Image (cartoon, rainbow, N blue to C red):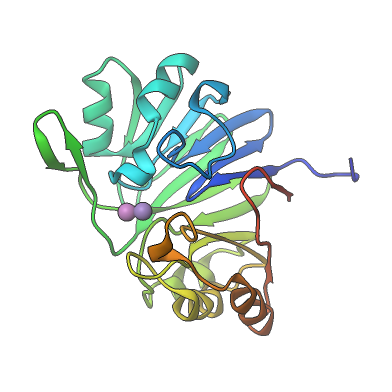
Length: 233
Ligand code: NI
Ligand code: MN
């Protein structure tokens, strides 16, 4: 191990990440069993918290199974927290603009321009508004944009926070594509960037080389992680 690293981010494929920080394990958007490119199976995941950006199937994924197996707390918007709370799972509801201090650090919900429905036994139901996540722990700030298009308020996020890492969707069609994600890097000014939400299906295949070059022109280091790869912060 290289000296001094305390925080570790592991990419599980699509928009699923495990963040290990200050002795805590945070799972984000665990879409695993439905993704043949995912690097872990739901039953292999060890976590204390599950953070959800929105209600779509490719983000909620295996949340119920993993939360039950780990007795994990689901941090999500009010509607998703209510949905999982009714199943007897531990939840912490939040909403856009709100910050809360957890044992690992703080989480703030930010805007995202997208949808947030989920197919259930009662049909497809609305699951509140989609969000991004600002996670602060161990003196570092990580921004997970969630699924979103480019928006000018990313400049405000960049002005108010010195971002050590931004997780940005680049797959186009459902979210920002490569060019808009590079513009997002200019707005946000993160030190490092990890792209997500691409290459899972043919519809969202992109050229990650073009993204890495664009990020370096925008002043950030892009880390193109294959599923299973990690980044130390
Ligand atoms: Ni989505
Ligand atoms: Mn998605």
